[in-house]
Length: 205
Image (cartoon, rainbow, N blue to C red; front, side, top):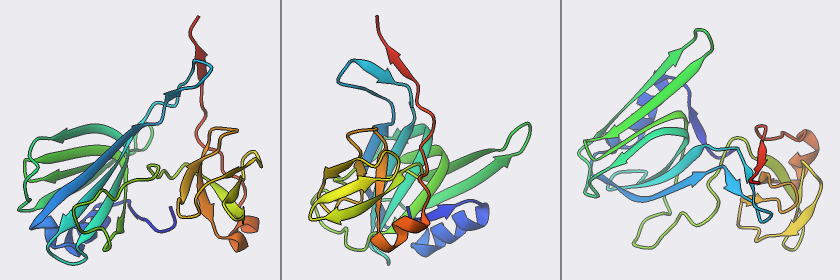
């Protein structure tokens, strides 16, 4: 997630909105929604259920395209594929009894997303008719992986290695099932393995 900016406060949200003219003359090009829970080949269910979504916004104003990454989606409503006049966003933080952050973005009355956290990055190259969101949906829970040689990469959580295209930054480790993020070789020794959230496994009997 090194290339992403995180929205932690209302000031961060206001900066995001201002960076692209409040999303005036923009449109949603793609939405990629994933559930982090899944059923394995042995029919056991990994109970890491959480909706995360990537949304690609194209605009007629600089920087022309932004990728929004909503983590822990609580609400997603899309009812109009047309262009937006503008967008608004809010960041609410409740600190008692535990800190809970709620991030809400509304694009006119056409799109509304509420989530636990929000990240974004400029995707200036993502203009045109084709699909751009073709890889795994990123997550801040991803553990580091390092490129070994050719197409081989190694997971820092279990040390297993597998083949994957070097252009794919995020890839699931086939051994431990963790989503990994490819990091430069010179960084792997400065990073201690960061395990993802605890995963419960349930086998239907």
